[in-house]
Length: 107
Image (cartoon, rainbow, N blue to C red):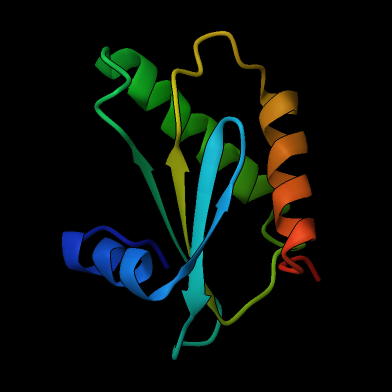
């Protein structure tokens, strides 16, 4: 399931915990619905919409490929921290796996 509404994002931001990385911030909290609920967001700090959309696409691809490894019963919001114009997918994946593993969110 995908988070699309502002109130859904705010619920995860307010109730959840945060994991800070160099490129991304991951917010997460327990969910009453089984399965994973996920949202992707970028900040206006990234000026060009092309760059914001690329950042969201990279985060979505990271989740799509690794969703079998990520724990169920949680709500996740992936937030792009800064411009990812020079970032390669493998760097984002390495950081995402590291952050999730550090918090015990991998199966």
